[in-house]
Image (cartoon, rainbow, N blue to C red; front, side):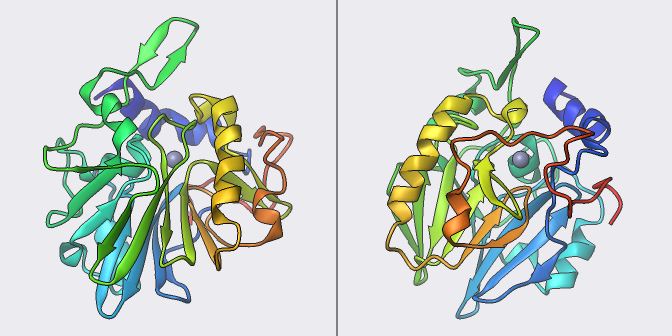
Length: 269
Ligand SMILES: [Zn+2]
């Protein structure tokens, strides 16, 4: 098991306990074709139109009880033919890691073009203690499609626009679906006061992420966006507050809770 996989599986839940930093939505069906699955601290998102469902992110590798969560929202993972990955961190791309059980065995995979360097090992994901370079840990089988900023993919009448939002990782993508649903991955952390740049600890280039959020706000201006589907803050309505605090930094601490409505222990739900 790689270092980041070990951290994700065994360390993160203890580090995050009591900080109320993450507040994913429970597995559920929302309006406008949106549904999600919760895997402890993270959400995978789905969009359904005219009988076709596409997926965004794939959750953790070999997450237990994932079948039960799919049953809750009435989606068969084998029917998913397209999965768009926001970034290749273990909690977003672990579910399609070739060294685990692929939860979307029949899906074409899409990632941002600048994200591939983590998979090939050309780029490390984190530097800790000033010199220890950790690799992302995820391996993908060949055949994924690389997306560029602004590229639009039409999936049976569903419009998916890739918006490059580098910072959390270099190839991090947001996806705007049918002009109305924003899949935001890990660029934003949102609480009742609105959106903040995602937590520095997990963000590879925090200043770059802040700049990217300004660009994202501009890109979405005048678009009829209704909802933001986040990696770790659940389902949020889109509005004035979505980018309200992007010049600040989201902090998590056992004393300063980021989101008073977030669970104390995300493994219990
Ligand atoms: Zn994440």
